[in-house]
Length: 199
Image (cartoon, rainbow, N blue to C red):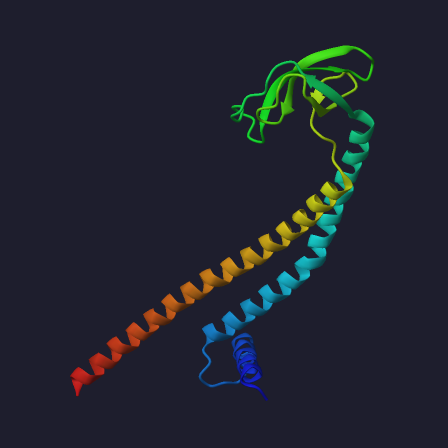
């Protein structure tokens, strides 16, 4: 048996004794409550896995519906910049810059307005934008990959929330338990000191 396996076995044994002190005469009621709470948290965290998967699946399905609606409502067109794009980021538009441009709407009409562009792009540069049925600039449609990312993120976030809440609750309980034990020790030492002064 390697040193690593011995250390791993020792950690597992200590964790199991913390969860279930058994009939150990040195185990106090606080130790038993700590073990019960830890066991409940472990069960809760495990039980949160299917709930997180379900939640992530629901978010994924909802985002797929959004993707279907976006595919029908949004159109990709080519816009031509009518002026040079700024070199520095536009205020309120952290992802890049915006520049004046002209494009043809899905209904055939000409539109002008401000569109996302590369920094420093010169007038006459063609950029690809997304527009709605009326030809107004809109955000890019939701994609299946984006739906997957959103679904997985939602599921993981829910599970981490449950695990974090359980860990926080366990930590608070241990702090309170430590204070209770310290207060008990203080009382015992005070009682012992009184007994010593009487002798």
